[in-house]
Image (cartoon, rainbow, N blue to C red; front, top):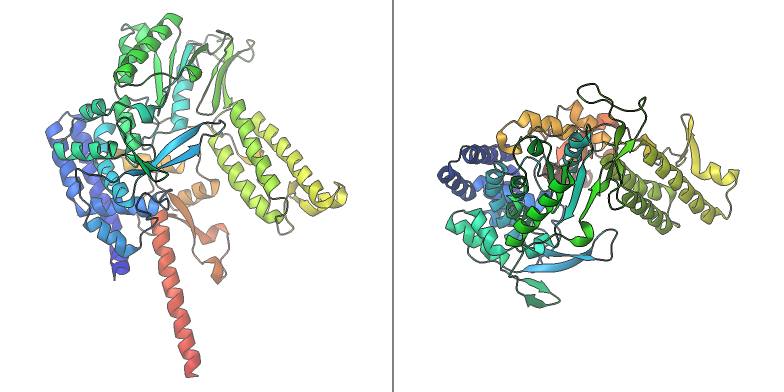
Length: 565
């Protein structure tokens, strides 16, 4: 019965109701009506629609939905989801989180994750639904990490726009252990919300962590891994850009200053070294008040064009950003038509290229005894994701280099399997698809080459636009053009005008999109474009469950018919 009730919920109406309230919260905050903001937040968190949506997001949409907290619960069935939604309300208590250590990519360090139990995840999502639109209305324009509709590519484009016509000094900074060291009292004071919500957030911050069966107190920081933790970290860092800008006098110096934030990393760009040094000191002073500090090993000053302390350019979010001196025939021009004498080039960083090729090499080594088709499918997902991420910058030469290295790695794989690499080996694993010799099976399953990914510049999000401003059409169009969106999904979104065919809602911002087969593969369906359609992840789950139920019902009817005969 519970399964039917969950499936029968009008999710389109639920999402519309929640989004309508979020938009009202956003607009009330923009006009400075704090009393109205708090009233609407209370209304939102008490509504059944918000509770249902919170439960669905943590149990169906969340990528880490099957990771258990201290309660050991990994997943919930529809009747349990309904019970959770019906009993979802804020308290002044919280169960501790489960501490899990995960390695940081490319380093020997480990990152501590705090995994909340299922009930706390749902509560945190409910609070996030209410808090996020309030703070989206006041966050600085060039803050991008952990914000709906604002990602790494927007940050990179903001940096490019800042230096495309003028070389600048750069403060490339990283906040040490940002999540773990935030002053909780200062954070709660900055939140400045109503008492019930304050007590609940305080309970989450001080709930403690369980590791190896032992409970450890948490007197500082906000645990990484929680649903609401990224938002709380952004709130804690709110005001840092204002503090940095305040040390620069109004006028030309202020206009040429650029500050770009992504989570706990940020860059400051300005033509004057003296201004950069002032900004660094201002950042350090402000961070000290929040019990934070810059990480010396990851904080440096460089110049985009000329050497400074042996540094030219800088790496940010996996991209290398640098300007190169060029002759007049290759140089671009500024707005006045004057030759710049340099060219701004953004490309994948050497570190990320090396890690990517190492990852591919490890996969190939682990698939030495596996069928070729399994290796191809595993590599395709890695190559496609990596190339999509870097498809918005000058990556043509990098993609060509990676393609050649992967070919050498695959040649070694083929030699290992056959003992040599002659024409017979080549014919077994490489086949002509069109005019090109491609690593593929005889059935036509081929490896994607890095160079297959087209280079297409990303369009930065407009000014202070926010997902909660009510402009669904704008955000829907941007969702279909996201650089990390697989080409197949992008084409399907274009075909169906960005609409989920199950619920009828437009795909926006961070919606999780999955490809559904109109005719299931087990019934003879294919991967051809005409048999595919885009669905939300939760909508895909509902459709799959419905199809399975119909299939079982049909099988039972067939068995009954056979028995009667």
